[in-house]
View 1 (cartoon, rainbow, N blue to C red):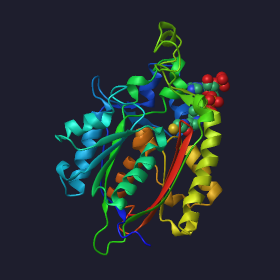
View 2: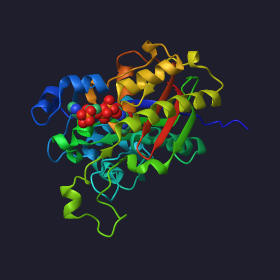
View 3: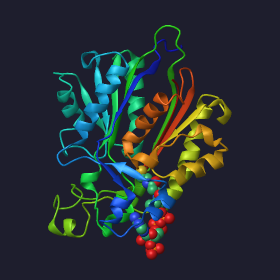
View 4: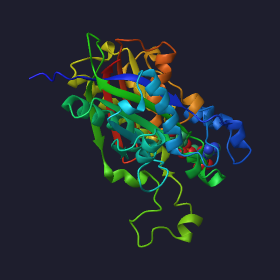
Length: 335
Ligand SMILES: CC(C)(COP(=O)(O)OP(=O)(O)OC[C@H]1O[C@@H](n2cnc3c(N)ncnc32)[C@H](O)[C@@H]1OP(=O)(O)O)[C@@H](O)C(=O)NCCC(=O)NCCS
């Protein structure tokens, strides 16, 4: 029997902190170059938080804008889902802090910890809650304050130059009237065997001590990435997962109007587009301005593509992401 409730995106919002750090600014604090960063990743600059501005602060700003766009208030929200790899604290989840900042009293909130794939995982959870009838309106946010956990010295340059801070939010609700909007198929995957190829090892419970002085001295409290290994996996998994969602919806590449790939590296997305024969005008990018915003990348890109008039009502969009875990995911929707 066909599900009568169909989840769709009814509003979007984004926020990046005002402070901008260019590649040239990084040249002054570590052994790197604008050329190296641009050629390897496409990134020209990124936004970073001031001291004391946290992930839930960025999430709040993006949420307020998405609520306004959806023409509703925080009180209309039945559930908050926040995807992040850079939470304010180990616990409680940043979604609870966001809930409090939105002035809500007992609205349920949950964190999703699937790194760069976290927004698409969250979209799937929101879709199921809305389509089951348990909730009418769900706020889904991807938010990251990466800069406080990066090593901005030459030791950490291979990772630090790639990331930026920001948040993107969407409101998910059930479709009403004759609007074509709907979230269709979603595909989710993970493969923990590669956890240590891209991770932030410490602090954590996997060792005898939560954190030690040598963990700090030797940099285990900063993210580690085997860049080339991650690159190769990302290209292959993104290619596969795009085909997987298209197959679920019985569609081909040419039926899709827009592709929103996770913004980790311009070269990864160009390679995926080449392998799938996707015309370049259908692949949107903003990594040049923001760097890799992990769980926030796709909702920020969605919001900008809508506001720039690239994505229009009724267009079909495929979003796909790959990140630590490894995790990877794709979602197909009509806006
Ligand atoms: C990280 C990445 C840009 C590096 O590009 P690469 O071409 O693989 O470069 P390498 O890591 O092989 O490093 C090449 C050289 O540049 C150096 N280098 C690393 N970071 C540098 C920096 N910021 N500035 C200047 N040089 C740098 C390395 O030390 C190395 O030097 P060597 O040849 O003397 O040993 C690329 O591997 C990548 O994008 N990986 C995937 C990232 C990703 O998708 N992450 C997903 C997370 S969501």
